[in-house]
Amino acid sequence: MSTGPSPVWCVVGRGTGGRTALVDLDAQGERIGSRELEPAQLADAVSRREAEHSPRWVWSDTPTWYARLLAAGVTVARCHDLRLIHVILRHSQLVRDAEEIRDATAWDAPLDLPLEDRTVGATLFDLDASSARRGGVPHDIDAALAELARQLAAIDAATAASRLRLLVAAESAGGLIAAELHAAGIPWDVAEHDRILTESLGPRPAPGHPPSKMVASASEVRAALGDPQLALDSPPRLLRALHRAEIDVESTSKWELTRYDHPAIEPLLRYKKQSRLLTANGWAWIDEWVHEGRYRPVYVPGGVVTGRWASSGGGALQIPRQLRPALRADEGWRLVSADVAQLEPRALAAMSADAAMATAGAGKDLYSGIVEAGIVASRQEAKVGVLGALYGGTTGDSGRVVPRLRQNFPDAMALVDGAAATGERGGTVSTWLGRSSPAPETAWTQAQTSAYLPDSAAGEQERARRSARDRGRFTRNFVVQGTAAEWALSWLAALRLALARFEPVAPAAGAHASGPVFARRAHLAFFLHDEVIVHAPAHQADAAATAIREAADAAGRLLFPGSPVDFPLDLTITERSPAK
DNA sequence: CTTGAAAGCGCG
DNA sequence: AAAGCGCGCTTTCAAG
Image 1 (cartoon, protein in one colour):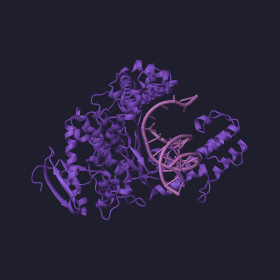
Image 2 (cartoon, chains in turn orange, green, yellow):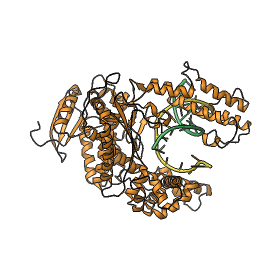
Image 3 (cartoon, helix red, strand yellow):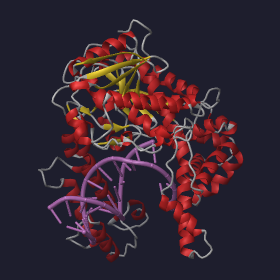
Image 4 (tube, chains in turn cyan, brown, yellow):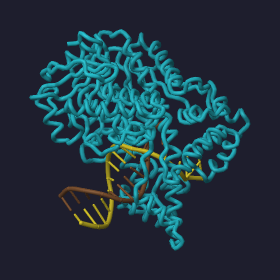
């Protein structure tokens, strides 16, 4: 095969008789070759073709195929994830005249089982056992070819097809990155984690027993409330006990308790913090989630409607700042941590081409820039105001500041105000690259219609107005959060390709020697919305930092060509992640 | 007994 | 001072 032109796409799928099929397509999507292999031969074949042509690999679902390739030591540069892209295209307002892609099909199947459960199979690349059980997207080669053709047609026919193509590439790169992040894991210092737990809770107790410092906190609360039997973990009972002590709170939540001055409050808040740490990230968490010095969360690209990632398992996106010091580089390695300063408002400034907002943020802290422009008096006011603008705040401090922002940043505010108005009407909004918000439920639309009839009850009208405003706040935020997520994905994708060109080093001596091949050079280890951590051999740390900055610049240019808006990073090189 | 909602708190 | 967006996870508690 392949005496003709080099393949641009290479589609992978389940072939006949338990074999795996590879089909080569040219730039126009025309078939130029195909072959079938035994599943065990796939890794070698992919590796060879990646070296020769570096085609864009097309497959049903990245975790299903790529986890196995990674396990076999093979990485690829680019892919097209049919499941992820189907979700985008099916709802995107940019897609026209492509009714086929909007029909309900097996490609709508959600990613519903954790990664580990989906890679069960008698042999490598034996998809039958797992796919039959999970009822997910089709893995057959014919289904993949047909769906790819539908998707390419939909993209070609789209308005602003070039933006949609960026989104398709970024989303698919996210799939690869998520699988690699899982394979690499986060370097985790169990001894440091245990030290933090012991400091806060006391030494690890026997199973079924509460830690000593929690027992002490609870005793103080019970004494201060004069209720020696009180069960602190039951909010209704705790609330009644607080009332008996004349602490007149409506709930047992932290922010409400802090407003009262009573001897029970301090130990109670301490107890709540301890309890949270123990149940969410205590010793049981270590036992379950950390193995051989790595915490391996399952990342779920596209798991949030806005395009942000979700996670499943161990709460990867909610690691408390208190535990950040447990992220520690291997011996002789460094953590290169970077986060974008005020990503969402910058994304808004860029997509709305708001010159004043771009100037306020140029090269520095955006909130300070708003103060220096004389729009508000303090950084805190600027921050609360901007967040209010993004989230639709109308009360309190943000409600007071937003009108001033509307005056000074008219283009930015017009964009989010317009998105809110569209949402309130039941309309659909889209991100910069073309991910669209879900349409309202039929019940929502019906309630709106019926509330406008002359004989509707006052309560019904009020409920309908409130739910319209709720939806307006969602669509207002959707365009900003979603566009910021697109920027972040583009950043990661550019960074990943840059790091892939770093020289591999010999595996570190000691416990962490095993692991995926790409983890033998500077590699991504953690991602959280606007923050990335690269785990790098010490001598590659500076170059990795440069790559992170260059990737951020590249993402800005790619999404917003010619825009003056910049995306400055806070970047540190450390052995241990700072507590912040 | 299981299941689902709500409360509460962690992250951006 | 604690609102306005998006999540995941643990626990309690009531309903089936």
